[in-house]
Image 1: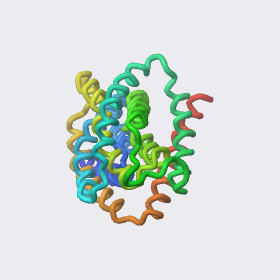
Image 2 (image 1 turned 90 degrees about the horizontal axis):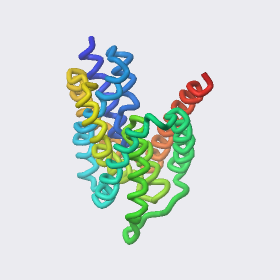
Image 3 (image 1 turned 60 degrees about the horizontal axis):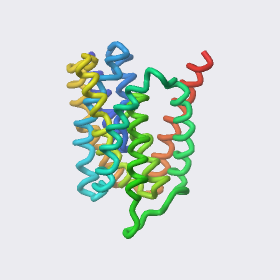
Length: 252
């Protein structure tokens, strides 16, 4: 049953990744540990290389629709990747539970802004996010990615849309591509340490490729208002889940 469960987990994760511009580890990490019986460290490491085929598959629909901002990808990716490496090194000196609780509060606030379409700047054809703003957002998302073991999309999407005013569909497509760069440091480290189960990676990949394609196509076709409500609700659920879990860890 493990191969079948792995493929199904990858399929659902791919749909989420393609639709919401995230890496999909929100689902694959617990799935690898709970459903497939892998040790916790393997559950953290194995989903990272799965993000590469996820991004490749999911970005096709966004690219065809012109919903990937190449300029933003360039200025977000390199600072983000460097910050991800720093975030990974910082895990030994920072309480990740307290930081993740603060992140959950921030995501909840951004979820409201995304869902309502309020806040931030309003991007026009003659107005794009500034380079310093993109670099700063890349650093924040990358640091969170390395420190918390997430793809970074839950920071990138609301940051690009609600704070920098990028249209939501373009923010989702751009985030999906940038994530592939943010997880490079973590993927290399976990691979060298033997924390990646390549069999599980294969099962997940079989599922995420069609899943990401389906999720991204739905997003491209969705109406703006519907998309805002769905993406805002998704971010809100993620924030609530993270917040509840971290409060439990801190109190317990």
